[in-house]
Length: 617
Image (cartoon, rainbow, N blue to C red; front, side, top):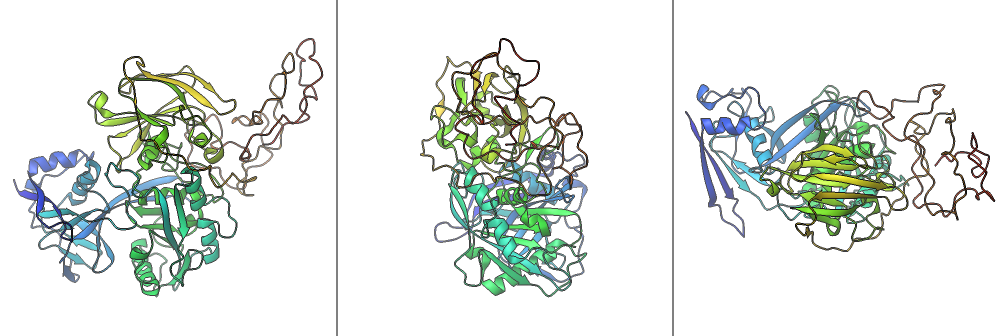
């Protein structure tokens, strides 16, 4: 069989030389094993092909003269409401000399080889570089490798890169990051939203209450702030309009992207060196039903027209820039709807939602309230929404590392408390969630394994998990035991002082379309069953939220547009709670004073007092 060399080296700069730190040689059989690990059903061995028999293009060729930067791109395809119909993974290489992106091609299974390298951590998007003797760039946007003899190096990360597989998690997820959003005007189409609207939808510059900046600040407790770029005089409130001299209707979005980046660099100077993040809002009409995509650990994200306005799409793609992978459930890699790295939704004023436990552990925002358990632990979990107001003894995330049973996955336990910045979480609201992901804190798909209510148990993790109780009064808590608490003392994560509470509170009402308010028909019983006697005094708990199930009477008409999608089929309740978000703090007292004395026995139907009418929020 043919052999190829897989070299790991550091690119030469002031701190390192180009001497390979390690050299690995694989024959075709080993390569086949590596490729098979990426779940290919029909892998092809190198020995069945001539490595010289790569399809040749008749277009012009330009030899590769310096390393290019390997980038992993995930493109989502779907409808206007965010239902993902398909997805595409692609390994590109960024050529610094041309400031252009090229798909890596070559011998059969070249793409799969690099995807496997990304998944097992040998190749890191945005950090690893590629150099191959005889490789060339063609006019079809491809980097063609003549064989499997190439060198993989490592560059010093600049701005726009995420944390990669570095165990120090905070390289891109804390601090202030500059951002510019580009509106594109082509010969035959232009981005629907104005430059001012795009600025408002990303930064709230005209009063928009829910946007990428506000929700990242809220979820991180002001540890990660995206500021509109202000260092370039041509950029206004973080937005800029770029004119490209080409038609875009029916054209592949990658060609439009490259033209937009080139014109942006021409008008503003090198954007990659100026801004931590560059957002491209492409005009409608490009080919394919794509929604958006971003490069992992990189500065660039790209959106199909109005998807540039939708907060879930924004946070999802910027999450990729920060090094986050998708959140899945079952066999669907987007189906975990407890956080923003699952599905996205075609609305600009909802949902209020953050990230799941594996992503939050990777981001490192709640380090002072994380704990690693290797034998046993027992205590209270609180939701991320209460990080700033709960006790330091109450944990946000529990990690069970792969080392406990010698496996390959780390496991995470968290309490998905619904409310505030996490008001619209869709999977496992007010339940204890169990997730797993490949061990480490680099790029890695996470999977939702269980949603547990009070009394629930889960025995598939390295240690058994039991939920004793869930208390939703005051600051909601879940009492949980993991393993045998009497055998070991857990190792707490490094201490850090949490920042102030989120800077943004939920809006008082949602947009007119779609409506998330209840149907006009009243519920059967406006209050809970009356108590036999009044309480000793008014409680400080917030008003009870409406139940998630629909009213017994159907609505008189359908909503203006479809509800958030996709839903699990069939669901027993709507995919988003039907009320407007709650107030930022609970009411001081109930809406009505208790009765002077109790009735002799519960009435058959609710009395007019203590509550006069159901509360809408």
